[in-house]
Image 1 (cartoon, helix red, strand yellow):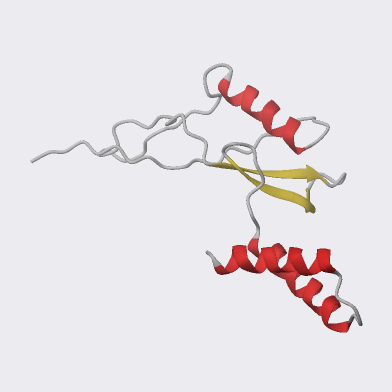
Image 2 (cartoon, rainbow, N blue to C red):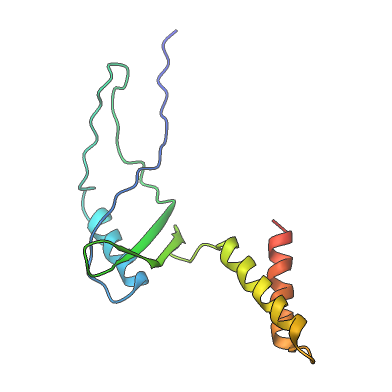
Length: 128
């Protein structure tokens, strides 16, 4: 029995835009891709694949600033969700918490603000 199965895949489309910051870069890229027809064509190469088209869903963004030499500046790269909000990077949060806890351990008096922030980070990470 023949079935038609629509498989929704995420396709990464890298664009190059001029923008003042990451937020403006994402909005500019959205305009390039969604204000008109998607400027990317999909072609099928197998006889069982009858068609392929854009599913009209964004699952996230990776924004990289040009390093001036034609490549990405990885130090200024960031991952954002479909809503343009930064994704939580657990590695960064853990490094921050460990650093704060190390500082707190060496202090004669505990810095309450650092203690609270380190506690918040650890609570977030342990809840995942």
